[in-house]
Structures are given as structure tokens and as C-alpha cells.
Amino acid sequence: MLPIILLAVLATAIILERFWTLRRREVLPPGLGEEVREWARGRSLDPKHIDVLRRNSPLGELLAAGLDVRHRPREIIKERIEDVGRHVAYRLERFLGALGTIAAVAPLLGLLGTVFGMIEMFLDILTTGVGDANRLAGGIGQALISTAAGLCLAIPALMFHRYLRGRVTGYIVDMEMQATALLDALDEGASPPPAKAPKAKRGEA
Image 1 (cartoon, rainbow, N blue to C red):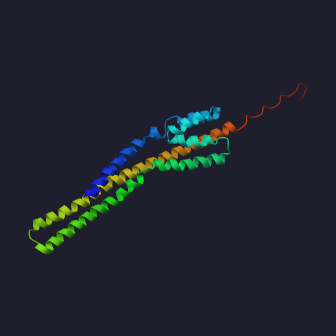
Image 2 (image 1 turned 90 degrees about the vertical axis):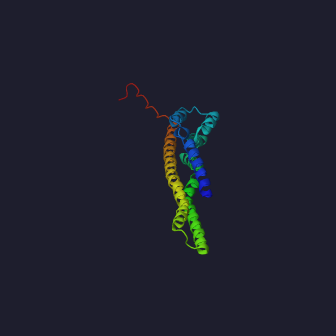
Image 3 (image 1 turned 30 degrees about the vertical axis):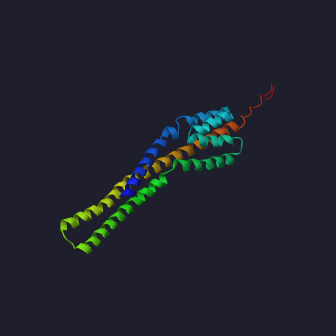
């Protein structure tokens, strides 16, 4: 039971920390993508703007990576965004692997505790005899408590693990969309304005 209790405390801490860290306005601040695209179109960018953007949020870090190499070809910008995106995704998934491990291990620990309890009870029967049947039933019930405790920990841990993984996946998809929109905006800013058609001279048909 002691390992199960410790894992329950750890799982609770992970869930609370991830819910606080993975708030949408902290990962994907509203309006940030459009603001950065306006910067890119107007070319109103300087290193200070980009450094502030990088520290703003995970989305800001991703977009700043593209702006760092905005004068390079599109493929190089895309590769830089993908490289930084892998690091951002890793940080968003922080501790989720541990939460999934807790969900998988908790039932096994509960079962192990039950097995140890049953072994101890049968060894006691071997030395002292069956004795009172009510006492035997009570011993079996007490041994099964650890299995129930393990399942009570594993079920919510698995549910929160799946939910948080889904939230992170949704954030990553949204960041990919914002990065693609920034690439398009950079292409618009880099393309020269269309040349005006020459005016026809008087007398020319």
C-alpha cells in the first residue's frame, strides 16, 4: 500500500502541474499568430521583438525560430521551425510519460500486494490450521484491498494521461497551422510588388 500511496501523491502533483502549464492562453496566446504575421508583412522586426516573442509562450518560441531565419529560403525556415517544434513538443509532453507509467504500474503493485497478503495468510494457515472461517475470509478481504487501491489509482491516472496527451496533440496541430501561416506571410513579404504596365504613348494604336 505504501508505494501505491506515494504514486497517488506523485500522480496528483503531475496532473495539477500539467493542467496549470497546459492552459491554452499560456501555450497559444490569442491573437499572437496574427500579430506576428502582421510584423512579417510589414517587416517591422528587430532582434528585441523576436527575443520578447521567444520568451512569450511555446507558440512564440516556434514563430521566433522562423523569424530568426526569415531571409533564408522557405525550406530552411521550415526545417528550423520543425527542429524547434520537436523541442517544444517534448516540453509540452513533460511528465506525461511518468503519468502513463503510474497508470500501468499501479494495478500490478496492487496485485503484488494481494499476492503477498495471500501468501502470508496461507503460510499462517499452514502453521496454525484453518481455525475460524470468518478470520480466513477477513484475511482474504484485507489482502484484496491493495488490488482495489491500485485500480482506484490506475483508472483516473490513465484517463488524465489520455486527456492531457490529446490536449498536447491539439496544441501541436494548432502551432503547425500558425507556423504554416507565418511561412506564407514571409513569402508575401519577400515577393516583389507586381510591375506596372507601361503607359501607351499618344498616337499608338
